[in-house]
Image (tube, rainbow, N blue to C red; front, side):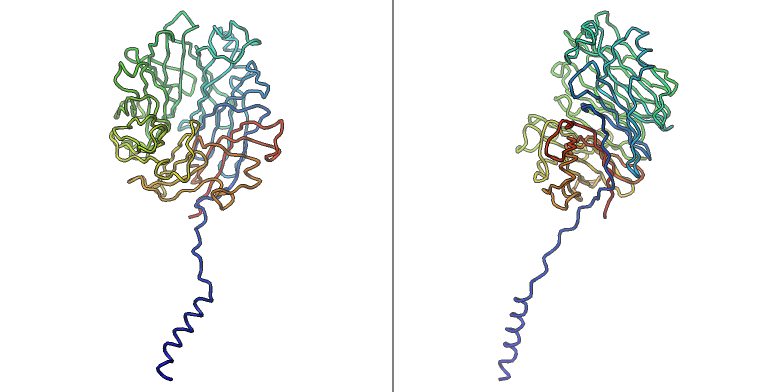
Length: 457
């Protein structure tokens, strides 16, 4: 009998273990929680937006179009969102009535803005810019405009204090042509010191491409000192604010003749070139950029490589030859690493032509945050490895595929910007606002949606 004791105990133990359910490993909660959301709501339809941030506020600047589609009533709206509570100030119209009268006195009587751009400087000022329709479009008459843009011949710039009171106005007519029908002027802003850097270019005649780059400071008093660069052949397509200085994206009018499609130039605060890099033979792959405080050599960039085109010498995976979304680190003009995030994290992403990949670096946690569609992820800035990844559905419902009343109401579409404001991650997204929570109504319209997000761990 004693021989049977030990096997009998083992058998009983096995029965007990079988009868008791084993604990199922629990998935950790999403790394982010939603602190607040703010819809920047007007009776109109939002078209295109830009955003910038200080250490307390996020500023959003967007085009507004009446739901009727009446382009004669098109305008631009400037908003301020407080990062602690999500409290909204605005909208403030630009050009406002006084600015429109000033522009009319200069010969521009039909301001219908497009291409909004916003930036902040170290003194708490807010700068905005818009392109304005040119004289040929005005000749048709504001009341009969059908929405078909002729190239812009003017750029208008507004300067605001932190409370959205306009303190300055500047403008620039197109350079170098007496034929406004075929002229275009493009201007973008980047923050630096006590002024905003204006970067862009113009096309004297869009029938024969001959782009020319221009850049210069827009001072707090409204003084605009734009100068043309070198010979014709390229323009600054976009400017990006960095912790020290800024980054400009140059694009040639003829990539085949130029032998390149995009050139990145890193400027310091004084406007001196720190480094430059040709990204490849395809134009426009770079879409967003972020820097590291105290390390001006490092720039993180993101964008889309199309048609299998390499970026800084690195080709996208063969599985994504058409639209390969990337995040990369550049050190002193040289590629340090690149992540093809849709291919490598494909279960989280849906690739579409509207998605951007905004970036922001968190120096307190030494993490690089990136977003695409409604997905958020944290990367190791040294290696590019993923530390965590989530999406808005998981943050709101606990399920990456979940849907609840919040989603039916706000219907977030794509993140356009990410900021760190007072230690909080703030995202700006397009939202298909539906006041009837998914059941359809006359008030359905695209609106900017600003989200305050806190780290859980």
